[in-house]
Image (cartoon, one colour):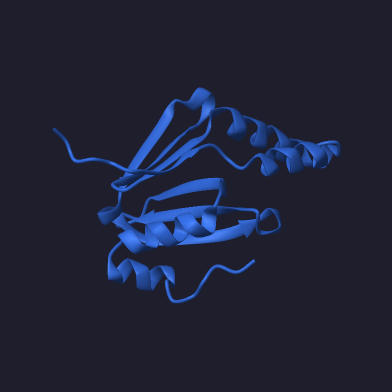
Length: 133
């Protein structure tokens, strides 16, 4: 039997991102943002568990990335949608990045992930400062 894995979050991007981008999509200039938001809403899924962070995305959801907490060197979040959702960028020790766009509950998820990573990574992530917005 394997080690039990508790699911903290399992779902897609925040619905507000899609609604906002469809609304601004009526202007021709914002049309690429709207298309990106629609594709994200259809095929992006995020799963944060007690053992790893997983992201499924890309065209038709064909790209999957799994990251274990010991490989994370930094976590940064940026509030969006008046603080209702946010983007999270997870930097790995090898320098690659995993981007979770339009993540609901991003503050709570940031706090959870930050608690699972090394003290050095917490320092780089700025764990002493709370996310404001």
